[in-house]
Length: 499
Image (cartoon, rainbow, N blue to C red; front, side, top):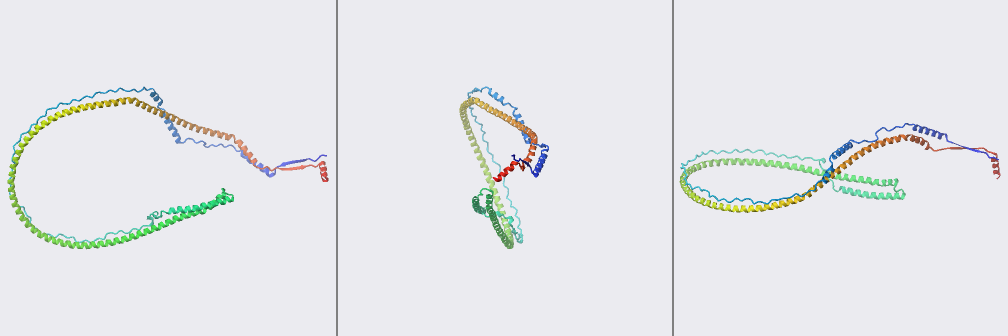
């Protein structure tokens, strides 16, 4: 007996089939978009500074390559070996010494006779004229002047804008703020530790919740630190401002008090000057009257005294003139005698001095010749020693000359080697410039090749975009089963019932 057959059919839901079709149409539209190449600049060229650096490097290389240091090194290598030059010397010569000349006795002029000078005759004495006495005048006395009151400066007002508030602030304000901040920070650290302990107990240590708990635990302390700092600074400023106001008030009171004192002193000084002026005027007036009276009396007495004195002076002058004329004549005669005797003695003394001077000159000439001869001998000896020393120095110099020349050649070789190294370094810099330009050109070529690769893979990229629109949706397939019953199925069912 045959059994019945069964068939199954899978179908997509209508709404999912519509979604597939819409996604396919959107992906097909995107995949059909044409390739749009990038037309902007993709490689940055060299800037002006780099271009100037390239030109400067090329100029430096050109200037460095103008001279060939290897030729100089080759010339030093093939240079002949330095030799020691011969050194010669000369024997010192003794200079000629002149022979001494006989001293000459100078001629001495004989004494001349002394002459008696003529004496003028004495004229009579004259009585000088005496001026008549005059009436004494009373000197003018200046009247007293009114005393002036000196100027008194008014006190100047000063405000808080002119004062330095910082000078009145306490120097310990910052220490108080730092200590307060340290105390608050200590409490904040304790609170942070407690918050971390709670987070560890709740199993949230290290997460965002732990950070939130720590931030909330620290926020009151941060606000307290800000309030405490601003409050302490404000209190310090207000205290400094009050101290400045008190100081300015004391200065203002002191200025007003000083101005009042200065005004009183000026008034008292003016009163004292006024009284002194009046007293001085009266005293000057009395002195002027007394001076005029005494001057009149002194004038009369002086006139009489001068008249008698003039007469006595004329008598004494007459007598003195006559006596002086006699004394002058006697002095002239005695002076002529003394001059005559002095002339004779001076002639004898000059004659003796001339003879002695000739002897001394003769002895000095002989002694000078001997000393000159000794100096010439000593000079020749010293010249001989100097020549030998110079010959020794010249010999040492000649022996050191090859070594110095070799050192100079070594120094030149070092300089040429340094110049050669500078040329190599310049060539390296020039190679670096070329390498930079080559890298820039390679970068531009690589960029063009990358754009070619991007255009070549554009179709595959668009196809992937089309397929990605379908691959992202879930597959919801419905299955429908159909079964056809046969005789075998009916017998099996009956047997099953009676089992």
